[in-house]
Structure formats: C-alpha cells, structure tokens
Image (tube, rainbow, N blue to C red; front, side, top):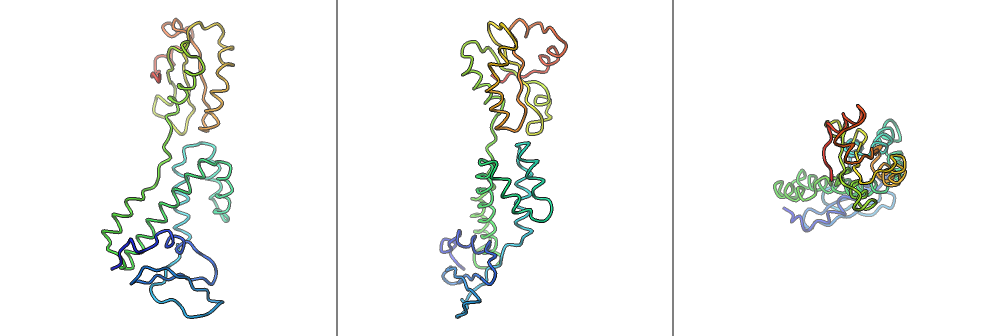
Length: 249
C-alpha cells in the first residue's frame, strides 16, 4: 500500500474537482505521483488508477450543508435562495462576494471536505489503509465559524463607550427564552449612572448597536435605564423585561 505522505493531497483534491472536458487524472499506485492526460493532445495515457471526478451532487451537498449552518440571518436567506434551482453554484459564489468573512469560512469548509473526500477515495481504491485514511481525515474536520458571543461583544463596546458610567448590561426577550440566537433579535437593558435622557443615550449608543446589527444580521436594540428604574420598573414592558433578564456584564 501507498504511504499517504507520498501523495500530494492538495493535488489529489484538485484532480478530483477538475471537470475540464477531455482531461483525465491518474495516480501511480506505486509512487503516488499524480499526472493528467489531455485527450485532444494524444500521447500515451498514464498508467495507474484513474481519479474519478467529484459528482455534482457531492459538491451541492457540501454547499447546502454549509448554508444550513450559517447564522447570519440575511446571508442565510440570500444563500438559501441562491442554491435553489439551476445555476445554483454560480449564484452561490456571487452571493458570497457580499459577505467576505463568510466567503473565507466557505473556502476553509470546502477545503476540509475536499481533503476528507480525497482520503476516502484513496481508501476506497485500496491504495492506503482505511484506518490510516480515517485517522488522517479526522485531522480535517468541518471548521466552525467560531460564533461570537454577541451579547458579550456588544457589552464590551458599550463599556468602551460609557466607561465608569456603565453599571450593567442585561439581555432579555427571545434570546434568554431560548428562541435564539441566530434567528431572533437581541434585546438589551443598559444600566447607567446619571441617566438624563433616554433619547440622548439611545442616540449615543446608535453607532455601537448598528455596527453589531450589520455584523450579525440581527436587530440589536437596547433600553437605557438607571439603577432606580431597574429596581422599580415604571412600565409593564420594563417590568417583564427585568423579570426575565440575564446579566451579560
């Protein structure tokens, strides 16, 4: 059997994904060398195992499973529409251009899938030991997006904005009840010292809240209060919010 280290795994991934008409790829089972053959040019065909092309349904499954894991609401909606019907692959790539961070995540996700597929092909062809192939494949798991703790991230930025005036940040609503994250808006109670005007503080927080709204795809909103209002809410809405609120910072 081949030593897996003798095989250029990235080269094998490229060969599996190459759908150029008239081009076939071959792997030498003795050396692990990968060579291409172009039918129009002619010449002797390489010996060894012909490398099969990745089926379109496999590539589509990678794409669909990636979209299913996207937590950015707007991106998820656009990508879900993009992969429906003919032309899905082109629309998917075009849509990702609008979301550079998500595009980078897709490249890492696609590469991990391609490496596992290449190792599985080697095992299926009997070229490498299956247990070894599975062990190597485990080193290429689907990368996670590294989801940000959105309430904590907003709280950090509010702390930088208000300094010592910020007493506490609490989250309430669907996020606390377990309906989110990823599907529902983020509602915060921001406890401040010296609260003079709710509208003034909302204006002050606007840039922070909007920045996180754009990044997350969720509507991030806040209710500024002082410590007295937190202890004795003056409206039924605030009383319900305080009753279910959970401390963020």
